[in-house]
Image 1 (cartoon, rainbow, N blue to C red):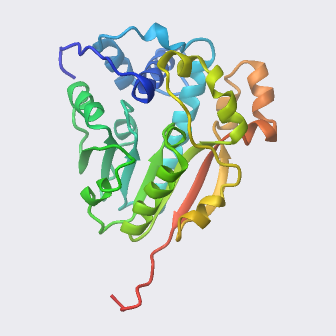
Image 2 (image 1 turned 135 degrees about the vertical axis):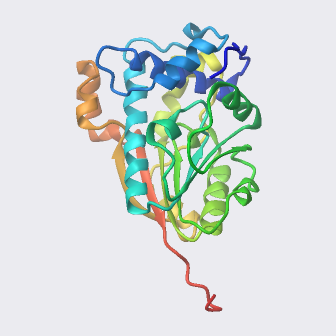
Length: 279
């Protein structure tokens, strides 16, 4: 990381990545952190930005860190099942997941986000070892998957991203991925409609002006909208051991099925498609 201190002027959805960055940095500096993220600590120190305005206080940093740890674990599990996969890290923001996990030795890693976010990443982070790439594009642009070779299966990770798209954009994104690559798995977090209605009360969303647009009640709805996609399960946002780090009201609420359904990690796979021409 260089000595410069870039001034940040992001707003809306792009600004929310600064909230999660700051949360991971705060948690990483705690005496017994849920998630060790020294890259986040360095990035926060390097940026010219008032992080206090984002409302990341109280239990919020722990909640963000537990979600990030869950996605790290799920990414590693996907790579264990398919070690030669290309990781597609969608809406990567300023997340150091490629450093925390490491680029798979027999695979590749693609961090995807808006061009100006990718530019800031280049100024803040060194290039991870291995077959690593940055793709500057909106996820709503259906052409970006063409930048990724289609000769490998993919492990697609989208943390805190898809709820900011609308339903049409989510479906188009998943169709583009399923239609291009031979096989793969994907994990992403999703809200139900009740959670989306309550979202404007969230301090960070109020501070940034970001709006959550997509919600889903039944995860199997996507398997109808995206041919080839197979639903494999829904998981809570936090591992039970990490949930225990939160204050007791959150621990109690976090175990209620109705609360768990408000925000879940959805898991899907898409198998290789047998072509009729035998190719």
